[in-house]
Length: 201
Image 1 (cartoon, rainbow, N blue to C red):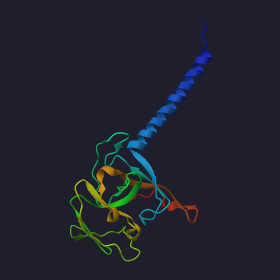
Image 2: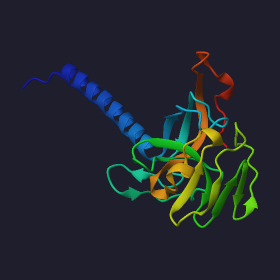
Image 3: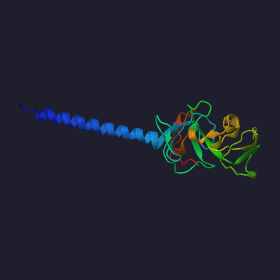
Image 4: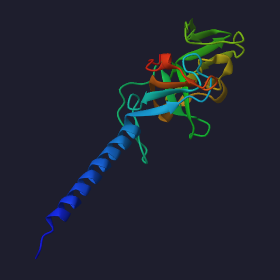
């Protein structure tokens, strides 16, 4: 019996490369599914916090990441709270990812009068909110049901949000927005270097 040591070495080296690449891909899939995911902003509903052409990373395990292919969520760090910028499945079709700001959680009563937001009857200052026409969408007092949150776009006069399609089931949450890793101005065809690395608050 003759042993081809050279052929064995080549086979071992190839197997080693395959194992390394396979492990890297598996880790990347785990990270994307359970830890962090990138998102692109296609509209101006969150101006000026987020602009069309922004690219961001979101923390998926903060609110308890959903395990792919099964109806199971990992333990959460905490529940969403007012002020968080959250990503979730659009409640109407549960397929499209949406990003909005959580303005209230279960049990809180929300009211919007012009440009003034009230939570449980107390006005809440909002430095991030943008009104282009003086606040044309009043929102009558509404108490958020258990297991849900209420989400508005920061660009209040140009956002389809909980004022239109209702509260967001916490089971639809995908993650909490973290920071911008890239931003492209589509009109000027140029990179917005000053926004890269900005934390999302």
